[in-house]
Length: 72
Image 1 (cartoon, helix red, strand yellow):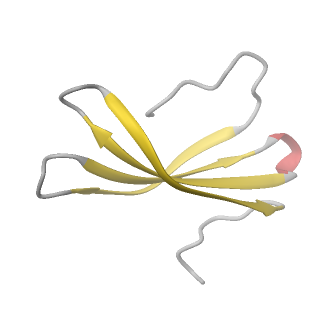
Image 2 (cartoon, one colour):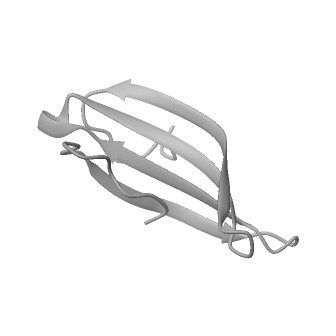
């Protein structure tokens, strides 16, 4: 997991896909389903394992529990 949930965070985190890029970074699509399935957040990240840093490329939120945005 690329980050730890904060204290009191009862959501579930999932890695939906990951792909190594030619520059050595990794692009990751993740989701977080909130407690009681109220909403789902999707985040696309660029992860640099060498520097141990990540950059958020995109994000989106949906009402309710969603499995993936890939099916759209």
